Amino acid sequence: MSLSLFCILLYFSSPVFGVEIIAHKAVAQKSLTVAQLRRIYTMRQVRWSDNSPIKIFVLPSNHPLHQKFAQEKLSILPYKLDRIWNKLTFSGLGVAPTIVETPELLIKAVSATPGALGYVENVTKEDIVNVIEISL
Image (tube, rainbow, N blue to C red; front, side):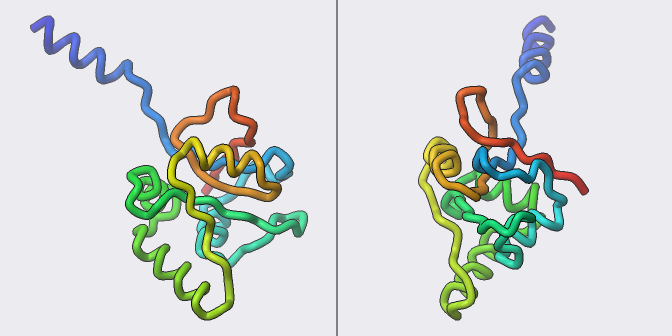
C-alpha cells in the first residue's frame, strides 16, 4: 500500500515539461498564434513582424523532442514537415531549417543567431533566449 502511494506521489510530483518555443533575444515578438507558428515552420512566413528574416533551427526528424514539437505544436507529422522542406529546397523556393544535433546546441544556435527561432523542452535562467508564448 505504502509503495503504491509513494509511486503515485512520485509520478505527480515529477516535473512535466512541455515544448517551449524560443527566439533570439533581439526578436521583438513575444507571442505567436498556432497558425503563425505553423506558417513559419512550413516556410510560408519567412519574416518577423518587423520585416527581419526568421532563421529556423530544428532537431533531427528522428529526435523524440522534434516529433513531440511537430505533433503537439504544429499538429503535423515530422515526415510531412520533411516533405515540405525538401520540396521548397529542391524547387529553389526556400531554404530548409538548420538541423542541430542536440537541444543544448539548438539553444546555443538560437541565442547566437539574430532572428532565430527554435524549440526546447525546458529553458533555464542561464539560457540567453526569449520564450515565445503560443496562443490559439
